[in-house]
Image (cartoon, rainbow, N blue to C red; front, side, top):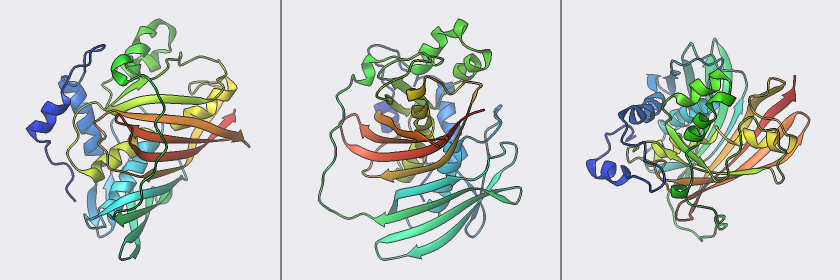
Length: 316
C-alpha cells in the first residue's frame, strides 16, 4: 500500500501554522522526528507471506504500549488487502503483556475476501506465545444514507493549553519519572478541554473527558496510515475514564490498570495531523473492570470514528 511517502511540500505548508494562544511546536525538528518515529514503528518488516515483524521503541517501559500493538496489527492486516478496501472496524484483545525488548511477530489469517467486505485475523506473538489477537473488517467504498450525532459544543483547540506544557508547570509537584516522560518530544499533541491535576483524587460526575489531539507534525497522505496513527493514539486516554468516578488516578501505586480489549469503528475519512476531538466517558465499572466509550470528531464536526475499551482496574 502507499505508506510512508514523503509529505508533499504543499501539505507541510498547510500544517506548519502558529496558533494564537500557544506557539506551535510543529516547527521543531525534534517534534517532527517524534512523529516520524511513530510512522517508522508502524512500518512493519515483511518476513514471509502473511507474517510481519514489528519493533518497539528504545524507551524505558515495562511492557509494550497497547496503542503500538493495535496500530501494528492493523497495518499487518492492511498489507494483505488491496488498496481499494479500507478498514471500517477492528476488535482487539490484549492477552499478555508485551516485552519491549524483543520484536513482535504478526501472523495474518485471510479469513474471507468477499465482493464488498474482507476479514482478517491477526495474532501478535512473542516468545512463542500469543500476546494479542485482533479481527479487522475492510470494505470497498460505496455511497449510503448519512446521519451522525452532533459534536459537543466545546472551546476550540486554539484557545486551550497543551497538556505537556501544563504538566511542566507542575514540575515541583510530580514524581521525577512523570516529569521526565513529559519532557520528551510528543508525537501526539494534546489539549484537554478542561485541565485537571494528574494526581487529583477528585471524583468526577459525569466521568467524562474531552480532548483535542493531532499528530504533532504532518503525516503522509495515506488514509490507511492515518487510521493506524489514530489507533495508536486513542489508547492513550480511554482507560483513564474508568478512574474518574472513584477519585483515583493512573499513577496510583495502589491501583493496577491494563487494557483488556479495544474496539474501533472508522466512519468517515480524516487526517490524523488535523485537530480531532475525543469525547469520552466511562459507562460502567464492576468486577475490577471498567468500560469506556468515545466518539471522535474533526474540527468541522464530522464524526469520523468511535472507540470503546474495557480495562482492568483493580486495587492491589
